[in-house]
Image 1 (cartoon, rainbow, N blue to C red):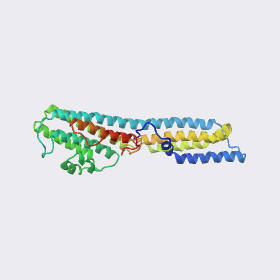
Image 2: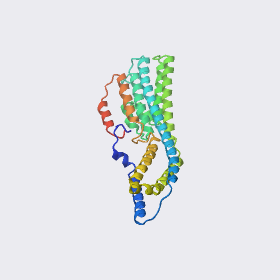
Image 3: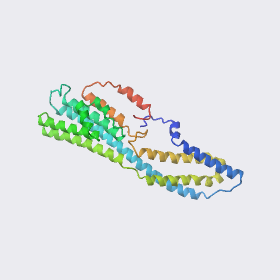
Image 4: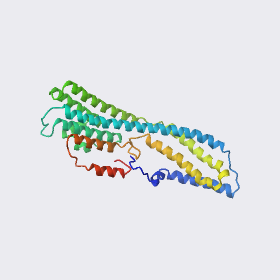
Length: 306
């Protein structure tokens, strides 16, 4: 995720450096042939203007649809933040028991730590990084053995949560109404997970992007023939600038349409999960060993959330 407001120009131009080299060689070749061989290669300006207008509308539509996918992903993770805090509040105030499970910790500690693990597990699953061993910081040995049998780790964690709140109801640590509220919050987590998976597994129509890319390149190839008569050598940097603008918008839409691919334009799921972990550990009055202020400062200086 791009977290720094000042994006380096080198980073931006690096995305289209090959295209810039090719279009530069192309317009230089046209200018040289036209100037030194007296070859009249002009076409009416209206031809690329009409094509450029249509392409601009289609490109704007694609960028808008890609942004909608990215923004929906961010809204979903915003809901995960809110519901995780609600879960911690409900668990810490509803459950009334002083027993220790296997001498380790109270039930609210286990349920809240599992929620922390769920946030991290969901972010990793969406980015296809399914290393469950890293979840042992928040899960017990028994929980780790349970989730290793599942392909969908976040779903396995939710099942563990549902079993424990049912156990709390059976033992009288919560009443029926509190159980309903806790189960409703778990259902929200399941809904958030399903929405993220829908965005992840729904591929943006490839033919739309392919045809638009071909049409855009055709427009850029015709543009020098229309501008060389009016601008002379100035045509070369002008076309490079126009082409760069079109290609950058196209690249932006390609990156935004997949918000869970571990790219700079991704939804920052790791940072969000860390912020949730900080808040939930404060509910438990546990001082985290992680220096979150230092970690946030590091993330702001980096372009990828790992």
